[in-house]
Length: 141
Image 1 (cartoon, rainbow, N blue to C red):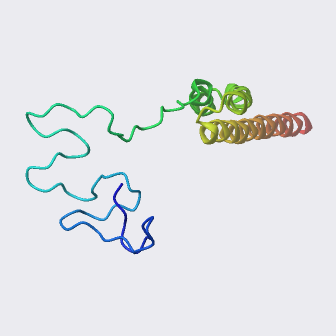
Image 2: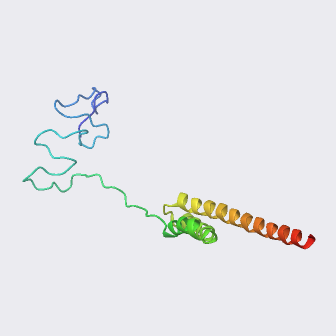
Image 3: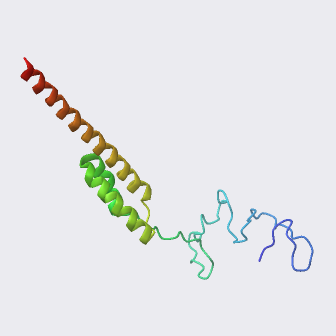
């Protein structure tokens, strides 16, 4: 294992960085930045070389995926607002249970659906009140 500058070796002496090697704080043996000419890029074997099995390579963790119901909630919030509210509640419950991503989309679908539904209800109320006022004024004349 290569010791880093300033770190103590098992014998107690400060470790020295090897000449020509990039600084590697994790001690994984991987260089940072652009690879030098003739060196492999990003942990890949150089051209014509076999991969060195047993050497650790960084693997990305599997994606948790986005909850489908959250996407549906956001779409429905813009088209059929009450459906967005219902699907938003369902999606948030599923996300809490499964740990999937998409909580922001579910919350946005829920909020947008509630706002659009509220505005539509105010529009209907305004329309009904205007009809009552119009029929009342016609009846008085």
